[in-house]
Length: 296
Image (cartoon, rainbow, N blue to C red; front, side, top):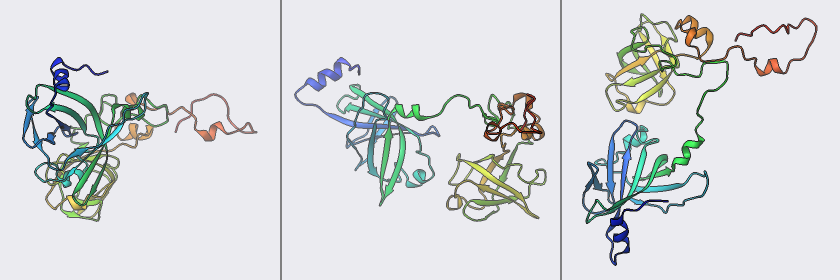
C-alpha cells in the first residue's frame, strides 16, 4: 500500500487536478535523464524533466504474488534526448526507470508510482518502445554460489584478489584496422602470448563505444599485428584510432588459475566434484573406487 502525502490526497480530491507523468531514467553508466509529457520543463530532486513530445505510457497491470509486472513507455527517438545510437549500443539495457505523477503547478506535490528496470527495447521507424519490468524481475536472477568444478568468481573481483591494474594483466592500445564485424587489429602484443586475453574484456576510452565494456573471445598474434575478437559485432561503432584498454581473461579452470595466475589459494571452484560420467559408472574389474580425490 502506498503512503500518500496529505497534499497529494487533497489535490486528488479537489474538483480539478493538474497531474502529469514524469520519468527519471538512470542508466548503468550513471547518466540520469528526466522526461515529462507536460509541455514545459519541470524540476525536482535536482533534475530537469524535459518535455518529450509524443512520449506516452501504457496501462500498468499490477499482479498479486511474485509475478513480474510489466508496462511500456512509447516515444519518439530524439537526438537531443534519447539517441538511437545509445539504444543500439545498449546504454539503456537494464536501466532504472522511476515513474512519477506530478502536480505541474506545484512539483512538491508528487507521487512515485513505480521503480522498474528496462527490459526489451524495440525501435521501429524512429519510434522506441521501452518495456518496463517491476522489481520482482530481480527474483528471476540467480544469486549465490554455484557448486561446480570451475571457479564461480570473476577475474579481479574481491574473491579472486588478482589486481587487474598490474601491467601483466592490462594493456592500453589503439585500433589500427577493422577485421570483420567482430574483430579489430592492434599493434602486435610482443609481451603477451596468444590467447592471453581470451575471455577477458576491453573498455573503450574513445569513439562511439566510449565506456562500453566488451567481452573478448579471441586473441591471436600475427607477424605485425595482434587480432582481438569480441562476442558481438562492433564494426559499425569502431574507427581506426579508437583507444581501448584490454584486460586478461580466465577460463575459470583450476589448471589456469595455477599456471596463468598462481592463485590456487583463492580458487572458488570445487575440482573434486565428480562429473555425471563418473556418477553413471558401475563397478567393474579394474575400476578404482578407493575414495581418492578426483581432479579435472
